[in-house]
Image (cartoon, rainbow, N blue to C red; front, side, top):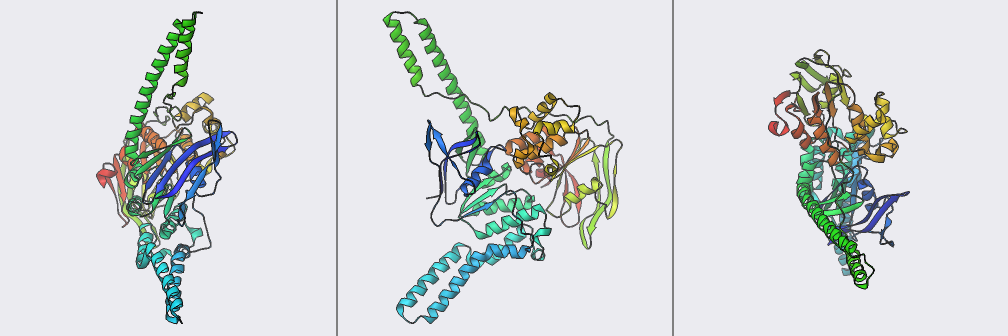
Length: 544
């Protein structure tokens, strides 16, 4: 039985059609991944499903077909959006209790029914109380029953919230902590349909892998948007691609989708070429029978009728012409073999030690993945490299002529929303012509009129791509990226991977994206959470 049914959904903003003729359904236990380019309408579609946006009817053959979004009776839907709501005056513990409120209400129903059974004056009252007790107890078991408290503590711990976190004010939490808190609250409510928009943003790899296991075993349906192809492969059994204003549903996870799509595209192109050849042959026949006699006229009429009656096959078209991503770092001068050296580096906050006695050398051409659980000091180590923070002991020394460029998790905050995409590039590189800027932006999949959009009109993922494009025109020979794939679509992640693999600068990459780490890095600097940090040869998979 379908939990969610969607039919003939469309959405336009002014004269711009975002998507149309969207139809699909989700069954209990089904796990669907929703993929597509940044700005293509994924988040808007989720908002329509949640009733936060109104759908438009789909125009089919000039006829408006009413849109329909229906959640099965008695079913509940829960939503995790990319930017979690903030209630700064609450503690983490108080926020968790709001998620447990439905369980508390059911427990009260059970207690009330038990009292009613004890106080029943006649058989009718007893039967009513017993029915209430049974219904409440069934609801209680459906939400995890007596294992609920234990499950709550396990979920919180996996997402980085131990008992010591419960009194912390939400207002003092980082954006990542707030997102993880929202995720914890959502999974604790156990809705029949989980709708997750980039749930792995701000999770470390251990938490991501825990969430994979949790969602695979989750009895309800799941609809998720994610740029993490490993995560999609582990969790989903269905893939829905939003492309060219339409939604196509494929059976299987992301890897299965890739294979099926390649086969479908090849088959469609072959059928298109065969049909075009047949149309060409028929048109030649018409040309050969241009005479005025009745027989020639009859041949022309019948032949044109055959062409008109054909179900025309569309040529395969890409979402936007993808430019092969090749990139060379802007000239920053030659550097020696040793780019940076960490000597007896330690960082503590009071009695808490993030890392101690770290010794490592970053050499020219190194491509280092910086990994470790949240809170082990990855971003702090980067801030020490940048000179923003001071180590507790030890120091960092740089080689001659090192020029550093840094992409932070908050790089989009520095974008001027009143400027266009192309103006943003030209403001940064005053020697760029508009053609130079367009060519550079094409590497990040901004093409055609996309470059004329105001920054304010971009999606979160598009802003992230623009911030990356702007940062990568700076001359540097040491490039540090902190979670660059957050909010990107999969195609943009793959483009970034290609670019970094062709990038000349020495690279340090902080990421929870296992695909990116395995594809790009050749060394791994692991902060293990017990104060230790070690530089290993090999990418994440080799270190793991």
